[in-house]
Amino acid sequence: MIKAAIVGMGHWGQNLVKSVQGVSSSIQFVAGATRTPAKAADFAQLHHIKMGDSFEALLADPEIDAVVLATPHSMHTDQIVAAANAGKHVFCEKPLALDSVSAKRAADAAAQHNIVLGVGYNWRFQPALQEIRRMIDDGRLGKVMHIEGNFCGPSAYRFPKGHWRHEGDESPAGGMTGRGVHVIDAMMYLAGPIDQVTAQSLRIAQDFGSDDTTSMLLHFAGGSTGYLGTVIATAETWRMQVFGSNGWVQVGDVEHLNTWELTTCMIDRTNVTNKQRPVTTSFPAVSTERAELEHFADCITKRQAIVTPDGDAVRNAAVLEAIIQSSTTHTTVKLA
Ligand SMILES: NC(=O)c1ccc[n+]([C@@H]2O[C@H](COP(=O)([O-])OP(=O)(O)OC[C@H]3O[C@@H](n4cnc5c(N)ncnc54)[C@H](OP(=O)(O)O)[C@@H]3O)[C@@H](O)[C@H]2O)c1
Image: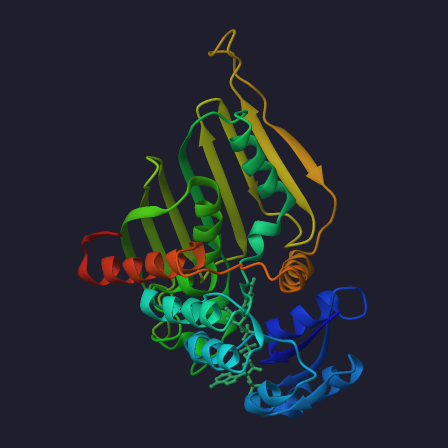
């Protein structure tokens, strides 16, 4: 049983705790630290979490194996490095960092101190997305040619003026930082590294805060193309559609992050003009938060790396950085 401490007990920190507390046999939260402990006192008591306001005290506590960071984006890198220096395993919410140098610094610190660093890209634990990966691996989907994705919702309205989410250095390129990075991670899981982006990012709905309308064209090193949009001043929706040379598959808009469906439409090779009806398959309910935390615990037990200096989480930060650069310079940006 990995004994973990939650750092940041806001909306998502509490969600992560609830996903495993009392139900997982591989990870449990025993302690926590947050900026304003009084706001989370009832929650901590309910879940038997010893509360404090000092991150440093958690790092010095020999009872704690791992820290789980659910803090504002700009705090992630320094907190990961501090935890690695203290010999604690770290699970950090997305994004791992806001630029590639910081992401690499975090991953290097984990490698240097031989601790496991996980990152909250929970889309990878969606059963339907994992089925798409299998369809690519075993050839059913054919060659991946193009991926379309979006992840939208009312975040710009949900966070009031002055909230950290609206600050330019916490949410550069609008919904990309909070939402779009999930889709980028899922796209790279299916189609490999991205080597070129062209982006535009605007604030249209409100007269304050982060951009609310961000869209981008992507090119993958393996030859596929893609596009992604994130609009954060509209109703909640998400979708990812993968076009292969044998047909297309789509995930999206299920009861959020718990029940999973895959819609498939394959070409009839005996008559390619024969219009096929899409077929929807359901998968058993899975909590992707529980799955990612249990995977993290399992990797600690096996001493198996998750985030590595040359892996997808660091590449994701480089893609985010390229999107920010492209949208501010109005140019196409190539990635190494
Ligand atoms: N994987 C997912 O699908 C998903 C979904 C949502 C969020 N997230 C991620 O989870 C992380 C936390 O997001 P959230 O929605 O939980 O945010 P939140 O509700 O605002 O919570 C942030 C927490 O960090 C604490 N904190 C410490 N220093 C802070 C500072 N300088 N400014 C503001 N807060 C500070 C806050 O303390 P106070 O109690 O004093 O406010 C609060 O407990 C982010 O990385 C976010 O992207 C992931």
